[in-house]
Image (cartoon, rainbow, N blue to C red; front, top):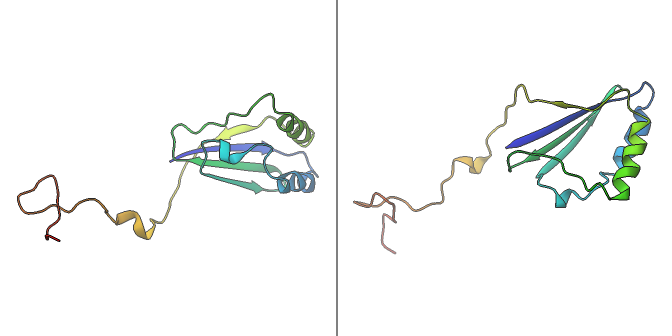
Length: 121
């Protein structure tokens, strides 16, 4: 799993404007990216964008010719108190899914080190 985290510092008093921009969703098609999951967290002083991907490395490539990306960038620029910065994951924990320990491959059979069903159908 690869994770990209971007922290955007907000100018004082711009939280509600940021919330409104976030309610519109991303200015690009998430389905067209390499990401499998996207979350956004909002505080009084910053916005944290989290992008998760099974592909390595996770990068965010936006089409520069897309006017909606430029429009969104301009709207965000007036809310920002500084440059966006990339954050790194310092600690992460995840409870395994119930199916994480389930193996669906062939079962090893007697004398068959490559696997095979133990019982004949």
